Image 1: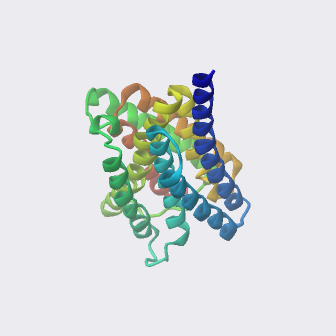
Image 2: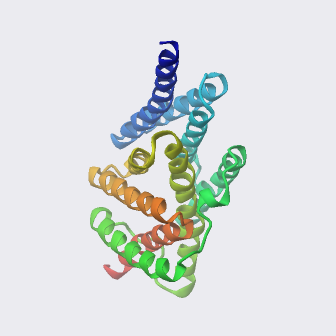
Length: 263
């Protein structure tokens, strides 16, 4: 009976620690979705501090603490996104600041948790298959999301230097940082606690809800679906370059090429 009670208590701690943190993320994003920017920011700040205290003082397993530490990354990214002053009039340059800062935290988490290059997905096996497949998937996703957002272009025209600039930002900063956070780190940490499917569902949900700033239910639903696709592909291939190419291609088309072509 004692063993059973201890096991039950351990499972409860896992559920409470992780699920409450996820609910905190969702609560902050719902406020942002409804237009309450400062309350949403306040909830995220409280959540990030609560998770930090839980990691330090909580009686959690190492696996649970790793998940909680990983959840700090999307929270930090959102807070920086909301609080970063506009130093540049060019939006793409602003992205380099917001996402560039996150590399420091990503490095710390990977080092602290001893996350290997294999877990991150640094491999180029079957690149000759993955490369064209990634381009096709990225194009398809961009065309679907464009029907939802109809964004204004982040570049003035399709000159070579502008295409190179937006590609660098969307691949090296936006795509790489988001894939490292949501797939290479968060998804793999969740897998150790909840298994393949539940971890895929939770990471996809978080990826989707983090797009609430657009104020569109359809965008949150699409981003959740896109996160599910990226997560599923990552689980099957364990290839970070594959999912990065999908994400980067989709973003370059969505925010650069498609808006200009439809003007």
